[in-house]
Structure formats: C-alpha cells, structure tokens
Image: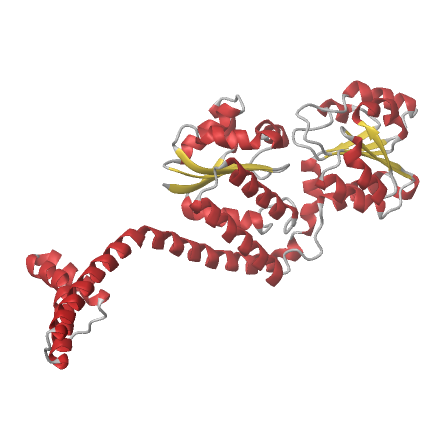
Length: 417
C-alpha cells in the first residue's frame, strides 16, 4: 500500500470545472465510505474547498481513486483528466505539508486552509476511513504547518479573500460607508468578509441565510439585520454590494432576480462577489451592464500582486518542509522493518532465556559462579553469531562478498580487527 494525493485546484482547473467536483459537506462521510467500499482503497480523506478538491488515500494505485472521483460526480474520466494531478508517496507527503502551510493557496500563507484540513481529518475519522498511516500523516502535517507559520513570515501582512472583496468594491464605490451590503450565507468565509466590510462602517449590513437563527449572532456582532434566503428577491435592489458564499448545490441568485433588482435601482451599479463553489450567482449575471460580478478566480488575480514580498518566507518554508518530508519517509521505512526487528528480538530473547535457565541450574547444583558466568557469556555469543557466521560460510563468490559487506556494516567491524 502506498500513499497518494490527487485532485484539482485553482492552479490546474478553472472555476467551471472545480465546482463540478465539489463535495456536499453533509455527504462527505458517506462519500468516503463509498470510496472504501471496493477494498482497493484502505484509508481516505477528502479536502473540498472553494479552490480545491483533493483525495488523500492509501491504495495500490492512485487510478482507483481517480476513477471513483469521476464516477461519483457522474463525469466521464476524460472530462477531469486534463485538470487532475496525482502525487505518489513522497510527493503526496510534500504536497499535504505545503497545502496546510498555505504555500499552495490562492492567497499565499492564508491560515483558513489549515482549519479546513483539520476538518477533513475529523470527517474521515468519524467516517472510519482514517487509519494509522493517514492519521499519522495528518498529525505530522498539522505540526509542520504550525512550525512554518511560527518560524517564518509566510503569514505576515496577508491579503485575504475578504480583503480582496473589499478592495474590488472600493474600485466601484469610493466609500463603503455610503453603501448597503448584503451577505448571503453565515459560514466562516462570510464571517471573515463581514468583519472586513464592517470595519469600513457601511450604511447597512444584512445577512441572509437559510436558517436566520444561525445568522443572528453574526448579525448582532456587526450591528446588522437578518433575512431568510427566500426574502432576497424582494430586497436585492436595496443593496449596493452583495457577497455570497453558501454550500448550495444550485444558484441562489438568478439572472431574472438581478434584472428586477437593477430596474428597481434605476440601473445604479451593483457589486456582486461570488465566493461559493458551486457558484451562488448565475454566470449570466456578469453580462448585465450595471453589475460588476467577481468570482473566486477574479479575486485570485487581485491577491497575486502581493506574492513577491513573501518569496523569502517561501524559501524558508520550503526548506522546513523538505526536512520534515524526509523525517516522515524515515518513519514510514521504519514501519516496514518492524516485523523483522520484532522477529530478531524474539530470537535473541529465546537464546537469552535458554542460556540463563541453563546457568541457573548449574548454580543450583553448586558449580563455580565464575565458570557459570563464563559459560553463559560464551553460550550467548555462540548463539548470536551462529546465524551470520553460518550464512557467510555457506555463500560463494559475489554473494559471499555482499554478505561480508553487510556483516561488517551491521556489526561496525573494521579491517585488521
């Protein structure tokens, strides 16, 4: 069994492809159990975010998981193959370390991905698909990410998705203080965005959510009000800025809804920021003259401008990760030798017990203790050296030279001694 990582992200696939491979958070546990049902995959975890869908698993070959990914989303394998990356064991370990450390994020060094990876591990554990090997890798991943963030400047002066959303809004409206802002959803990303917009003291701040009770604490925190999702159509025209990020599998804001809102606004401009995967706002809305619709990929272009200043931190982080990858590989290799080490120790223990029992009998009958100890040490030495000596004597030619070299290395022997 080998470790594998495979998936797509914002580097390899456009949003239109990424949203087709996104997993419903409520069904993630069932999806993991379905992946393991064929027994070809032993352990698995799934990371599904706005910018990536990745499978981490132990299997004989990664193609099994790749085929399952396409089948689960009812897509032909050749539809996703051009965008899919697959990392075998060493590269998979490095990839997970880099992802958790924020080195592979759209926003370099962003901290949210670490929490998302921890959630992926929790879901896998609850689903019963997180075994010893993958569980150990996740724990090491979290440790490496913590080390990178605490010893480098990778997270300093970070430009977040939320900050980028504010920046884009200020391109259209000079002053957020004069605008009304509507947030659709009440998850972590909306909370981050609300915090950034609230700092600009908008004229009004509202949160629409399927369950208003969940949105109420967030609205109270930022001095806003709450509405149900089915009320958006009636009030959309009142808002200048709309930021949406829900887990809905279908668009919440359609073209017709926005057209009616623009008519109500007498075609005053609207900024709409869609942070959801799949998208919350129909793509056709972007064709309306008075709407400035921004997707995740649009925000990614804004935040890339700050990458240069963080390259020194990236070099430091990569050095830490490379070292920790080697450390985890050594742990993996040590696991492979455990059965041999256990068998070797068991054999040595049997020899020890045999010689000790024999010595105790000699002492019990009154033999000289000095001679008994001498006999004990000689007996142990002969038994422990019998196997390598016998093997060396039974081999010939190149094989004998190789055995001699190994014995010299194992016992730290030196020529002439």
